[in-house]
Image (cartoon, rainbow, N blue to C red; front, side, top):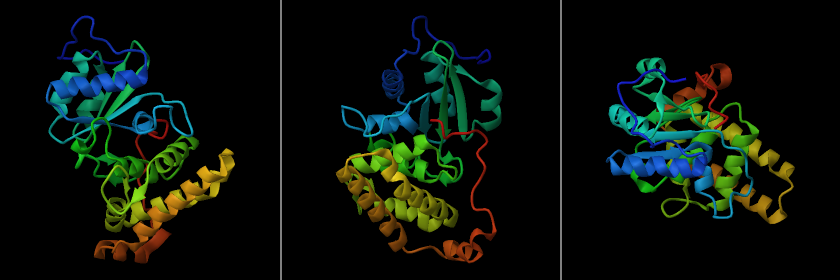
Amino acid sequence: MGATSIFSSPPGNRPVPDLIEESRRLVDASNKKGVLVRLLGGVAVYLQSPQEGPLLPRPINDIDLVTRRGARTAVTGVLVAAGYAPDEMFNALHGSRRLLFFDDANGRKLDVFVGEFAMCHQVPIADRLDREPLTVPLAELLMTKLQIVQLTERDQRDIYNLVFHHDVTASGGDAIEADYVGELCARDWGLWRTAKATIEQCQKNVADYQLPPAAVSLIAERLDLLWAQIEATPKTARWRMRNRVGDRMRWYNEPEENAQSK
């Protein structure tokens, strides 16, 4: 998969088969080199769940990382030393915002988002990376799911897991910061529009999972709280101008690659 690289991997330093263990290994290896990376995607949702696992488990196929701008060379060095092969062509073309690596031994790929998460919408995901030891903060992690236009069943499970296992509060604490989510949506009408549709879909579909009534009620209550905060957040002039156009103009991007299987 990966082409020959100028970096080299030390003998015996190879990815481990267990994906969760491997994710922890990569964050630890980066920390030891002074490179700040954090996890997102399905791995991050799993790690933000209780020890017994998430409410709605689902398969996780690969690893997603995020780092700050300017860390491209340092991250590449860490990952190659950890046994990953870079996609030289992809990284040459897109490396300022996104890097791609392969774990050939286990048949997995690894994405690195540099500075921001850009799929259907752009989310400034690298601004607060030092708030959690392993993953991006809960608000940003949830936003990577709320920004998906074509929501998959796996993404829906991730949203339910996050809001079930974590309280939704105005700000701070070990919770989903609804005020921060609201601020992101208040600046970007398109992100607000997609988040609205995603939350509505999740509210509609939660009864399909045959969860205990208390779990369904808690998920619905927290999604309501989140949306109430999004709506209550004062919108920017740019948001209000775009709101006049509404759905007559497309409000989202088509991702270059389907990121909804993470």
